[in-house]
Length: 116
Image (cartoon, rainbow, N blue to C red; front, side, top):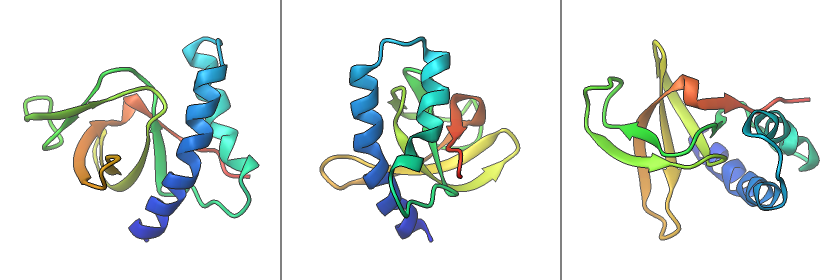
């Protein structure tokens, strides 16, 4: 299932990026708008995907604020969810060069897509 989610993330990401370039709405409104964007793309399953709802959101090696910071994400980045541990989700995403990163993010800094 993660491979299907990765394909869906690759299909949704350009739509989200395009929306963010064109929108001048407040971040709270952008979150609402982004959550329904996949409805415009036929056949996309977003059940294992989320998007980042803050800027410079820290991605950690483990599900703890004391763990190593591996990277930071920007608003709108689409990620694949692998597991959950209390208020943390284990995610993955791919860099443009194809390298895949696995890490943890606090769930407060992500949001689900709304399925039809």
